[in-house]
Image (cartoon, rainbow over all chains, first blue to last red; front, side):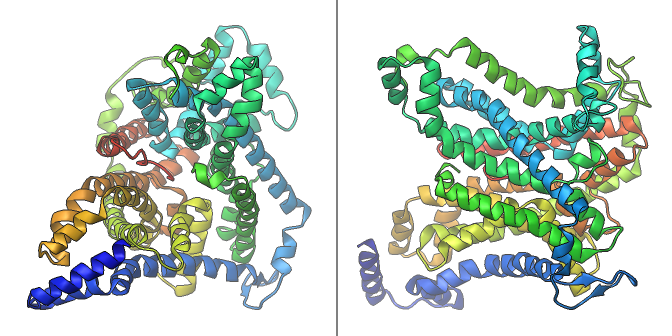
Length: 323
Length: 271
């Protein structure tokens, strides 16, 4: 409706006004009369950039994963093969994939649990200045330097650091030692154990969980919660049967971030954690010193495929409306 | 809206929420304490003493200055590219319906939605296939690609709130497209672009994962920090640099927040 009115206005205006002089003005008239030209002018540069630089690179990466490396010369053989993908199923590589998936899953669950009270309070009870306070309180850690955050945890988890000191002060040293002596997840000190890696992952990705969760919780009408209470539900029942189902799309949306970011990270486990590799570290090692770019490329396809399925599932649960 | 009688939060919820916020902030505050410690060799807590000496030492380190200078250059140029590309894209998507519109939003978001290591290694393998030598420009190529999305997000939200009739009125009054752009459109979306630009700057200034793949010999400030983390040389200098980085990135975030706080709360979404 509005489009027809506009074009009618333009034609009548063009009938009254003389054609504008100058190249620039003529170009401007052209853009107004032919929206498709305007669209091409607007979309051209970003599409060229993203299409060539980004999609081109992704295609180059994908192509590499179908090449293989010659075991004797160490050179890349430019022949299409699935051999490199087969290598992913060697026990050592499979271990890396399973370990990364387990870590991503536990980080996601823990972030959801820690994030919920913050998101719920900010969505339902914080008003005015408190609302801004909560918002900035999540935003500032989200945007402050990733490496600085990791570094801060290196300070905290170090053997001589503040956490050990605090445990010693309150006399809980035996607890810490007992936790660290658990096989697999324990270690010499927190900064070289899976527990340390896990803590840092939860810390660094937590804001990504809070924001979509808060957005989803803000859309839950308070009247529903009151109705549930009026019908005789105790708070824990309201939480389980009313609030959580309605907030679930937000949780799933947040979990997309925590899951995907954990899958691809290689810096946190390198700085804080044991020497056993995660997918990101394997990619980095294979493309760097080993020079096995095909295997590195095949490894990167793993998180892409996993995230593809994850996103497909999330879309079906309506998580994208909560983003 | 919750009714008035129901605005008091249960105590447990309050404690958990405040505890969560403390969990988010205390580690960053700890950095500030460590910047003043006299301890050189370990991460000992509590610090044995406090000194301002390390600020002077850091000030006189040429490698820190070089890294900082490179980071600022990369962030500034990437931000300019991201503002141009992001606002063009936002204008197209917000103003018109066309085939493949959804695909374009997805394409813009993809560099940030996929793990950074994928963007990084993809760019690296493209550079090596194309035999492009590593330089400051290869770093910028990567940074601009994932910075587009923050500008785009801010601009698209503002475009949606700006009434189309303003533009039509300007045209009816005889302004040509460029005059309308200059006097109507830009003043309307200006603060959104500024906010998006600030966030893009902060994002680029801080980026390390993609940069490790696209940088050759050059070290941006995060790359410098990463090297210090993996092989510590002078820990107190790292402490001071970490504190400065926190302070420097807080400013654009707060700025972007104040520029976009009325109405659209989108400033930092989809980092």
